[in-house]
Length: 419
Ligand SMILES: Cc1ncc(COP(=O)(O)O)c(C=O)c1O
Image (tube, rainbow, N blue to C red; front, side, top):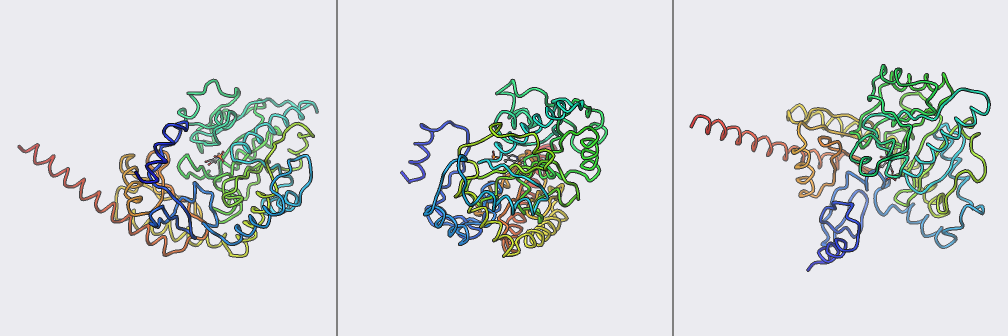
């Protein structure tokens, strides 16, 4: 029995069976590569689902972990430590927001943002404004697995087993301005968007839809909340994807790559939205601890020092151009889209998408599939063109083999028909 077999057997008995893991045991990583127990090297175009912005074994992260863990790992939010204000300054300067609350995960940040919206509407009501408690979320959205996040996540499979969810959520058709206008009223306390939907298939909001959401929210005092948990912290070539639109939300949420793999999330908001929160209304034991903050500061500084926003833009554009080249050759690629290093290639069948992910894994390249037919690429920000070339070559081979198999099957079917 290999070590992997032993672990699989133990997990199958001991863990809640929530994950369908790939049968690989990774033991370490270097740059954009992961290395398994047998020493095989995998090109990682997924970065732990959009987390490992600086790849693996980055010296800045290692240094921050070693130094901070020697000094102080946890104090709780009952006391001050050096990291929160320093990190909050970096985040607010780069996002245009005023204030920050630190959580541990993405879903927790999103929960807090929803609570902030309800509290803000309550404050406005106490000041004589007419505003309700309803959330408008978008079709195909994904905001996480806790109750509020799950209730504002569109896909029924994530919500239905746990019904009833949080009341007062209505879904708007994605990028449908007329539907947004029809569903918006003074009952709404917040419009919830991802500037570029992640799990929903790397789908960017249109300028028109985003601008209309901003305008409608402004007309009543409702908050516009942008979930940047997947798209934020530089993945798209800007600190937040909303900056590509020149539209500022009232609240945004960050997590995934913020501390390079150490759990950390953040709610960022304007001074106006922050008026709604007073001492004791919201909190966390672990969120914004000294270790996570020290690492996040190191991650931001490394992104800037190494020019990784520019790299995300340049290598991302190159990646999309190469994928478009493949699309011209292979009809099975229906669309290529994304921004920076948040990229999708949409295929014409769910079976082919599944097969492609499995075939890429056989070639030791990690990608995943979302929304059934969408190949998703969320590589580390340190990705280089030669890594893109490697992935494109593998995809080309897979699609050539697939086209040959489809053509052989068609010929057989034709032969059978004739017989
Ligand atoms: C846009 C978005 N929001 C929220 C979440 C939830 O984050 P977490 O898994 O850290 O709770 C995710 C995770 O995939 C996400 O992509």
